[in-house]
Length: 193
Image (tube, rainbow, N blue to C red):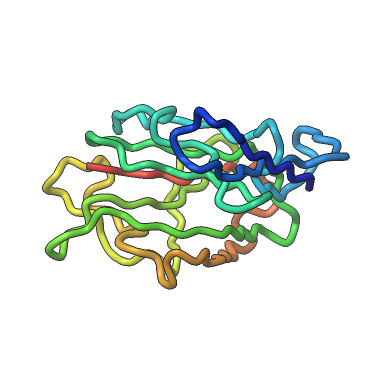
């Protein structure tokens, strides 16, 4: 990790100069599909963005990679200003013979008021190109409200504020032998009203 700090010194500046630091990863080889772990630090990504057919919205306007710390980048989903359902979709991975275990770090703060969950997210899996199935996560905190036309309305999801916000939480889901030896893709679906 290489950090460069620069400070602009100019008599014509409106404010006092403040240093700005930019970080780069150096001496690395980036090979597509070379690992089953993604730290979001590579210049290119195998993840894709999708707008669900029944969801509306614009995945390119919702999802982005953003730095949160020096040398740490994360995927971030914005609160879209209209009803939408968009997804961050993984590349297909081959599950081993022992089954599938998924682990990810996350934090969230979804719109919520007067006991209603207006926005939220959920994890879905697809095996061998079949239909997407919702994965039940221990951190699902309730159902998304149906009154505001959120395409995910009525579904149990990540809602409200994650425990320990703004700290990240690691979640691990053991899915067992159901996915053993199969080609599996995952997607994080974000629904907003």
